[in-house]
Length: 209
Image 1 (cartoon, rainbow, N blue to C red):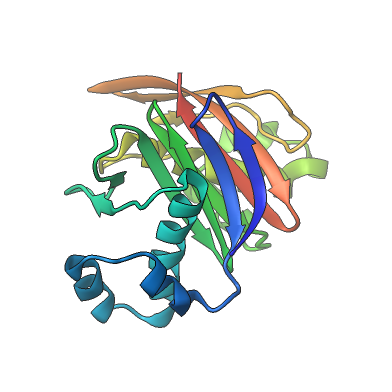
Image 2: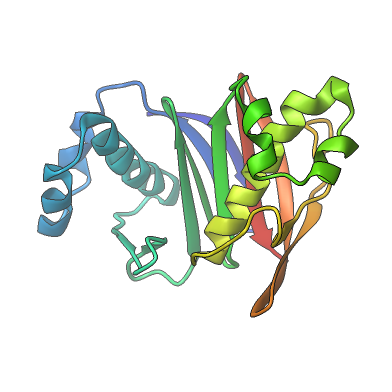
């Protein structure tokens, strides 16, 4: 496992991206997995096992302590015996992790040309029209990542990405965090949205304001 990207906030909060090309099966012994974890893995395909183990190995590496990840009834991950928030994302051979005292979500996505055709499913017409053609491909990847990250931070279901998530124009040249709004009748929150690019992967994470 190789650390490709790291951003530290106030200790111990962090964002990290790790490469998982190596023999992921070796993580099994090092992680001291519970009986429950082994039972979960029995029904997984190999790529799901790799993601399952890599996320655990990644948090253990970054926090420098044994960890155990569980999920709530919505499927949102949390660390046992730890009151901080986490989020996890996988794409190809990368795993992205975030650990913070406030609600967070993270998304990493390899470049895909087809995202242009998928955009109307998660971006409003006015959002699409506001993106200059020269930055449309990159920005649409970031729009998806921002909305997915906010959805993960929220942690529940029944979210309309076009109706409930208001995201500003995003581009990798922006170095400061942007503020996006999550607005449902029963829930309102603002999130700091951060974007970055690592080779041909787009990284986005949301931190509750």
